[in-house]
Image 1: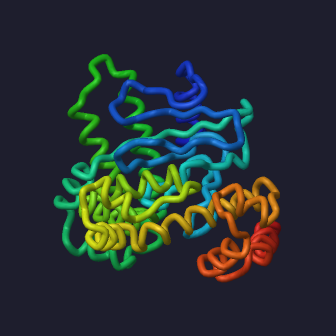
Image 2 (image 1 turned 30 degrees about the vertical axis):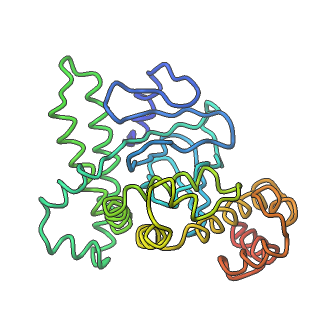
Image 3 (image 1 turned 90 degrees about the horizontal axis):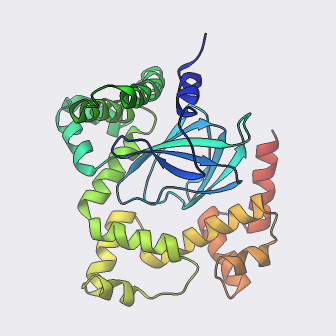
Amino acid sequence: METIIQTMQKEIRKFTLEKGGNPTGILGVTVYRFTEEKIQMPLVENPYLYIVIDGMLRLHTPSGIMDYMAGQYSVSQIDTPLMGTVLNFSEQQDFLALSIEITVNDVITTILNLDNDLIEKIINEQLEKSKMVISDEAVIETVYKLLSGIHRVIPSEFMRKNILQEIIYYVLCGSCGKQFIQSIVNIQQANEIYEANSWIKENFRDSFTVENLAGQRNMSVSLFHQKFKSAVGMGPLQCQKRLRCTEARRLMLDDNMNVTEASIEVGYESVSQFIRDYRKIFSSAPKEDILNIKKHLEK
């Protein structure tokens, strides 16, 4: 029997897919097709759901290495990287994914309609694992229901909004529920800080000062630093260090760069400073860390 993800693969391949992003005709829904190993993650203002349709994806985040197979999804966060790595291509020698943009208002509206005890269970991670697995599967099934709306004789914005609410509900009840709520709260509390964080993600190799970032947003340095730390969980310069070291980790793992090459590539002028920062973030020196990861991946 054909699985839902296999059905989605067939349906999506009916589109004329160019390399990169392909609009679907549904607001906020984009299909991506790549043939290169290094791919760009969506550059959008809103949070998004990213579903692997065909192939396998790896994301290097400060929280760790995350691998996604066909039928699995990730939820964008403040520390979502700009680039991903395709580990496996499809039989057609390409990688397919689908993104769904979700506004903060979409999520807040859904949360307000939920029972308080359910929200508490999500935040306190008290939902049963079996129910979270079922919810993750339901996310994919409901996304397919949204996609099937493309072929309706009368496409309905009413149906899109209602199906989107259903998708958000299942994401909240799934394995990413707590981090999804937290990322939405962070964005809602400090939207201008989210923009500053996005700028740092795109320019982490370059030197900058907190004074310049604060000035761009007409804030005092102390207020900007306070808001940034509240929203992101760390200061702007610490955020830059994490992004640099995370990218260096990826370069050493995926591109076989040595410590010196990786440190220079991500913007460090001092290798010893890079090693100190790396050790603080990942609790071990670069060489030792990479060896341990490779041993773990080989198991």
